[in-house]
Image (cartoon, rainbow, N blue to C red):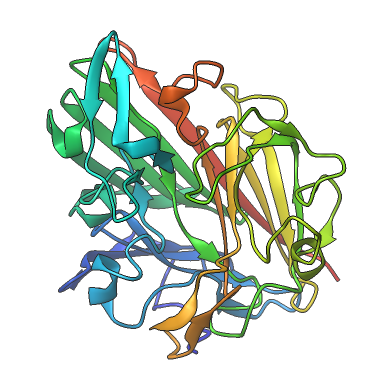
Length: 355
């Protein structure tokens, strides 16, 4: 594992060509966070974070072979859409008109379909101020893309701040009613990529309910209160202990209903702490939900940047988003975007250390 970030001077983002991954943008501040973003999939490929002693390590999982981002590792660090998470059978109705989306092997639409935003080459431009540095990423999704209606223009900003924050802000506009639900799908290991698993990390989720799912991970009923369930993470809990609870089935891939719902200002959704390094990551968001995925299906097929096989629990994804299958669940917050309106979403990752 290379614990050191690419050469960086704290000036505007540095762009380098990268064959299969598109352009590679590196940005950050000396001694603090440094990020690497690839334009293929608007993808967070690396994030160097200091530990309690100031030692930097890359805490984001990514495949050693960039070609795997088209197959087994396609969602690693990517911006996913038009609709993050699942839509049952790829079907929904909007204003009384039915739509059929592309579906994956299980017959459902996941993260925007078979050719979602994670596969696209985004355009990028640099952003730099004395306090923030990063990139703006742009994509146009045409009418009918993966079955979704309307031409959709999307901008994602990925910025690093001097105060050790990484922010993702999303905006989108459309010329016809459509669905929008965007997120970043990074996997984190606060001990460092390739060091093992996250089972000793402590996780807190500021949620009141969670979404029960069936065998296909499609919502199977109303949101359920957390007390007395395997998903109660309202207080810090070691991930290994949480997954050992009856009903956790060895792993999480579930939506948590944040409290309170959404809002214009990001509020805390989760807190992740690695006692071994002291690194902490606070997740703040304007979104109503958080998908917690503990990577229980990782089987060693994907080799990480360090050459280490990624096995179950190698990282954790904390995806801020609307709820799964909400186009078909009228009681959930609506993901509908109409002409004349603007989709806006913001998520901030705030890093710190504990002794």
